[in-house]
Length: 189
Ligand code: URA
Image (cartoon, rainbow, N blue to C red; front, side, top):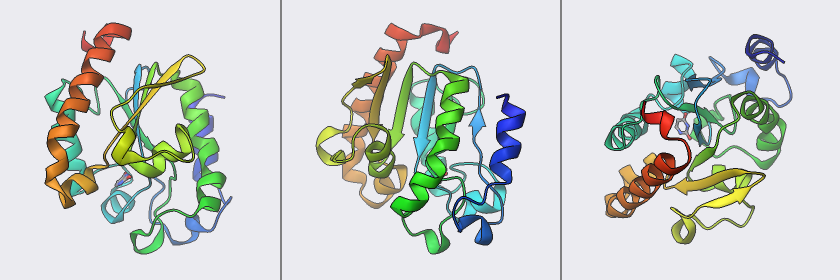
């Protein structure tokens, strides 16, 4: 499947009810050839209005975090979410919605073939790394699955709520940068 076919199929998706209440489907943003992919949970209000992931306050913080390790959403990474349509009132996406939607993300991953996948927050880590993932204990650790390395960071919204977690996140970002330099240094070309 090509990117164009995938995106147009996703835009016509009715696998769960979220398409009925969304404004825009939030497909993803960034470099489709990237070796590093970031995956959040699902669009919030700003993302729904703009059709792009992480464009609210959390998104600004994410961009700052990325800049610290010389990553840029339009240049050397790709960013998407577990669910592509906004859950009403910013509730967590239901398990059934995650299951209905994650196939689109997996198809994006098949096209991108990332070496490293960074999960933003617990929900993404529980879907992509393991169902019992504990973000407070296991953030910053690398997990290998089918030749791809996964790690999780605290979700930017959690860092806005609790800035005491920022120093640990800085350490996680440095570990991520070191892993990128080891596995896919072209990210920084
Ligand atoms: N939170 C997410 O998990 N993803 C977004 O795109 C925006 C906020």
